[in-house]
Image 1 (cartoon, rainbow, N blue to C red):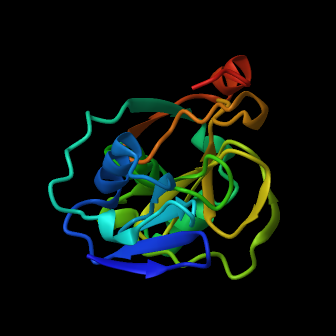
Image 2: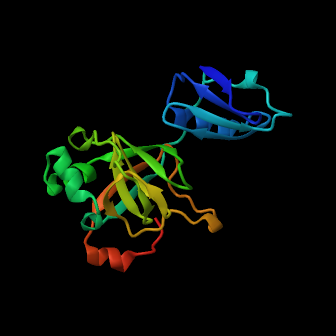
Length: 209
C-alpha cells in the first residue's frame, strides 16, 4: 500500500491489498487519531484528516476487518423514460428489450459514492451492455432519478446535474436529501434494478428508497 499526500489536509491510499470499501469501512470504525473520514473510490481510499493530529505511519491495510455485508437495495426503474435507451441499444447492437433484461438481470456493488452528493458508482455491467463511451456532448441537465450507463458502470443521478452518461431509465425514488442527511446507498452496498411501468412511476414518485 502507498500513502501519498493530497493537499495539506488529505492523503490518498493506493495499491491496496483488499477492496477499497472494506478498508474505508475499517478505518471509519477504528478512527485513528486525526482521521476525519475515509472515503472509498474504486481502488483507492481518500483520507480527510486533521493535520495537527494525524500520523500517516499509523495507517495500514493489513488486518482490516471485513465489514458486515452491505445493504441490498431494490431500485424500481421505468426504462420507458430513458431518453437514450434506444440509441444506446442500437450502438451496442442490441434490442432495447435485451438491454433492459441485461441491465436489470444482475446485482451491482456500489464501489464509490461521488461526483455529486449520493451518486453511486455501480459495477459491473453485463458484458453485452458494457463498453459505451460517454456521450459526445454532455447534457446541461440530467433529471434526478435518471439511471445511466457508461463503460462498465451504471449509476443513478440523485440530483439535477449536468452529465454525459447514457440515460436508459428513471427511478421515482428519492435517493438523496441533503437537508435531512439522507444518503441511503453507501460504498459496499448492493443494488438491483426492477422494471416498472410509467403508471407505477407516477404513483411512487417521491418515495424514499
